Image (cartoon, rainbow, N blue to C red; front, side, top):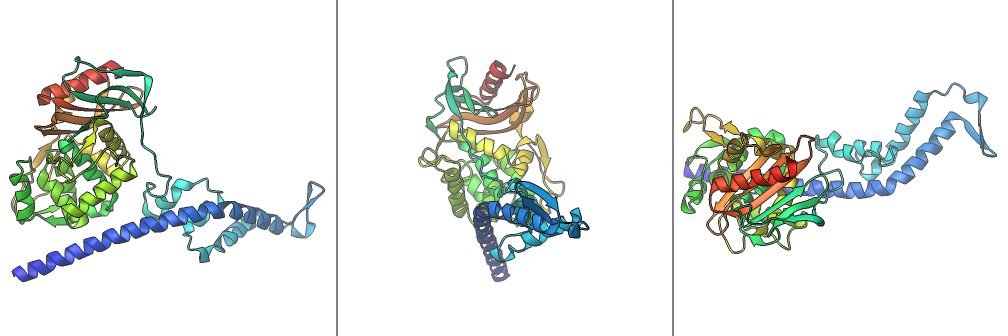
Length: 398
């Protein structure tokens, strides 16, 4: 029986590794196709125009056009057919049907390729560059807030509105899990949320040994991937985070490599480096508050991450060990929802390690729908951390 279980786990691990390879290969193919289409688009547009002119029987004489009487029966539908036929000649270039349509539009519909093929425009659209800058108007926060470090960013303008040690390296504690769910969300399909994952003793013991918070999953409990996502954020469950990492990459170590790849992609690798997916203290596990703000902004651009980070409560699926599921909460959102912050706080994740005190990253919108990201660290109590967010938002959103 144990041998069968071992073989089953090895088979699942192999499939996951293969899926990750396939995803990376597909991303690379898409990148090459996008590069190729940029080169082909101008030629395709020119070819289409020539083709339409020939089929429509339009003659250009001394700068004027004249209709060929013999071709008066050519209709607009024929022109459309000519466009399709001309674009169809690109089949041998390895370009998809959606990309052929892109060529016909002269590259105007860049964001539609992946939407038509995969229902998600994130990979096909030009990569968004995340950054924020200080200005002459950037306010230096002082003792009016308890937290030793803080930053507030206007997402729309890309300006740092206020800061206090925003570029100082800290241990991000459980704010780390924002990157955990972002990386996981980018490497699975939404259909996979209903897949199941069996918790192991190694995973459940990991959080216990390191004195982490947990969802409460037990050894051999079969949970859904969706449960792992919500469990990672709402109660900041180490069991869910390590389970999610293992599901996606086969091991936490392999997943951490993917997290650091994402930091590099976001342009943060000079000041950020993660050694685990939970936020456990490690001298080599660090980032700045500015880095964490950028990570949260990227997560806010991902639909699945928005759903998870905005949930106030969630009940996990029924299992043999928990027939009624486990109801979990995002206590930051529940504690701040009745406070006057000058706007609505939509997403949030807290964290705590002794070395960084109470910290949190949150995303709020003002009455005009403008987005703001606040990240703080170094508060000596969870409530003081929350009130710092309230006070900072009120100064700029109220």
